[in-house]
Image (cartoon, rainbow, N blue to C red; front, side, top):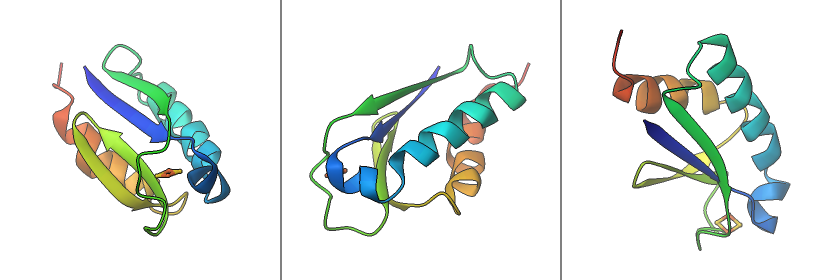
Amino acid sequence: MVTIAVCVGSSCHLKGAYEIIHQCEEIISQLGLRDQVELKGTFCLGKCTQEGVTIIIDDEIMTGITPENFRQIFESSVLAKVPED
Ligand code: FES
């Protein structure tokens, strides 16, 4: 199980956190990954001064996430960890 936590603090909210959560839900459902990927929100991660939204994939904090680059990040950082059937 890969866990994705999207920061929903006020700064990340303004930078599109909810759009990223929405996109993430869509990708998880399109690819049938509900049993492999857990999506949740998290409070401020203390990275508000960085560009973009902050997320955590498993234990790795990633900044600079935008609705434009999220899919690519998902593919490179999440799909790589999902075991193939
Ligand atoms: S609000 Fe997201 S890091 Fe602070």
